[in-house]
Structures are given as structure tokens and as C-alpha cells.
Length: 357
Ligand SMILES: Cc1ncc(C[n+]2csc(CCOP(=O)(O)OP(=O)(O)O)c2C)c(N)n1
Ligand SMILES: [Mg+2]
Image (cartoon, rainbow, N blue to C red; front, top):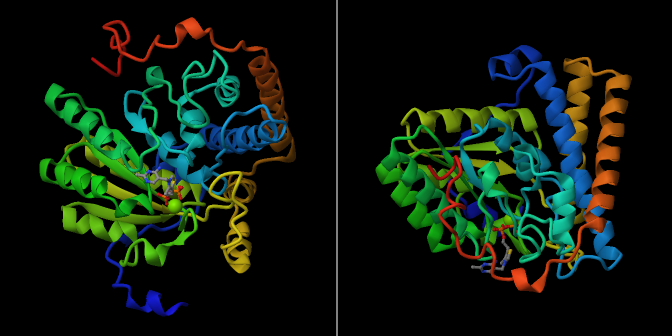
């Protein structure tokens, strides 16, 4: 442990328990079908990013390429706990949120390649995308600029007396910026229906956590904003789901915000151009042993008697889905330059969705 770590304050946030048995899972509201669906979504999430990486190496993706490897369970777990009329602002590590909300993989590949059928219709690249019809708001690059947006959505729900919840994601590195403080102060004082989700992957580019914040956990700060903070193992999809569900339903019932911090390790470089030479090897090895997909696969076999046949069927289904998706995306045309400004400014029709009423 480095010298600087010893100056950290004592933890305040609650540390979430792992979910042990199938009966605990049922209590949390998931049946066996749901569990297999979660596994499938984890596989799709990783598969989309792995194949995206291949597309990048083939020179088919303009710009850079980002993945959320290691963060799949955190993203899928939180999104599974959302209700369909809730909204969220997922970031560059949260592909799993798009998958759970129902963004079809072929549209994501089309987005990667700048094609017309991507959610931004070729107007933006990589994960700067979202499908508003599915209650997702596209991220901008500036971090953590989406938190005030999520808080604004929560304020709108309050004003309209809608029992909906907004989820705002941010990285632990971006927690050093003022927007986090402003968002949490505003949400805490007004007890808004918002859940703040911190993707703590322990690095902000090459900056380690002890140079990002001086508390034990990012979630320790929640207390000073007047709401609860909880830290959860972000490689444990069921534990993430349970904590997100608690936080979301608490917000819906008028209990105000929660800060849910999902602890993971960013298992690749910041983006494809970065080989993460600065991350100590033993750190990678330790977290590789806690791979979220492998962890949940083992759990399903031991606790929900997932059979070889079921596993093969899910795996084969995902493989086919992604193969077909790649083909369909490659067939998608480049956008027509005359459409450049279409969709840049909202029209009254654009706002006529369940998420805007
Ligand atoms: C305001 C702002 N400053 C700098 C950047 C450049 N940048 C992009 S990602 C990143 C690291 C963010 O770290 P963290 O919040 O921990 O998220 P992670 O990438 O680790 O998921 C930086 C500095 C940015 N996007 N926005
Ligand atoms: Mg980070």
C-alpha cells in the first residue's frame, strides 16, 4: 500500500453484501428466466465490444474505440433494476445499459461505423449515442456533464408528479469536478428521484484513485449531501441489481437520491490507443479472477442449476445475433450529407414520446 493511501479517511458508506442463494434473488424480484436473461445480456454486452474492437482493427471505425470490459455486470445490473419509464444517462463504460434497454446490436455496430442506422444516424461516434425512445439520453464527452442532466430529468418528474426515476452515471475520476457537487447538492436538498451511479474502475486514464479522491470510497461523500451511499462489488451482477433496485424504488417512493458506487477494474486501456502499461500487473491478475461473466456463469451453474445445454443455447444464440448484426450494420448506408442537420434540434414530434410527457 502506498504512503498516500494511509491518509485516507475511514469509510462511511455501507458496503453491500453479495447475493448468496436463489431464494435471496427471488426476494429481490428475479425469477430463473430473468437470471438467464441477465446472463445473455452480459454475453451480448461483451460480445458487442469485442466485435467492435475487431471492426476497429479492420479500419472500419473512425476515431477511437472504448470498451467497458470489467464493467459489464455493473451496467447490466443497474439497468435491469430500472423500470421501462425511468430514464438514464449511460457513459462510455455502460454498453450493458443500452443492451438491457433494448438497443439492437446491429444499430450499435452501425453507430460505430458512422452509418445511417446508428442511433445518432452517423452524426457522432463510438458510445456517444442513446435511443431516447428507450429512455436513454446520449452522453456528451465532457465529464461528468450528464449528472446535471439526470438531476434535471428528476426535477421534471417531480414537477409533473410522475413516479419515475432518473439514473445518472459518472466515473470516479470525474467525481473531482464541480458538476458532481452541484448535482448532488441540488438533488439532496430537494430529495429528487435520482440515483447516482459511480463506475469506479479505479483509473481515470492513468490517474489512480488515491490521486482522485481522499476518502475511502466515493460513496462516502453521499452523507455530506444528505443521502445514503453504498459501495457494491461491480463484478457481482446480482449484488449490483439488488442495490440499484433498492435505490431506485426508494427514490420512486419519495426517499430521495442514493449514490451507488460500483467497484471494478478497467480491464483494458482507457481506449484502444492505450496499453495501460501503468496499471500494476498483479492488479489485473487479481481482478481477472473476478471476471463478471465467469462469476455469474459459475453462480448460475451452482445456484440455479444452469445446464450445459442451456449455456450452449444461450451462447450460440448470442453468437448468431452478433453475426447477423454485423452483417446488417455493414449493409447500412453512410448517411446522406443533406441530412446533416436533421435531428440536431428537437421538433414537437420528437418530444411526443412517453419519456417527455
Ligand atoms: C471535462 C473533461 N475533462 C477531460 C476529459 C477527458 N477525459 C475523457 S475520459 C477521462 C477519464 C475519466 O475518468 P473516470 O471519470 O474515472 O472515467 P473512466 O474513463 O475511468 O470510466 C478524461 C480525463 C473529458 N472528457 N471531460
Ligand atoms: Mg475511472
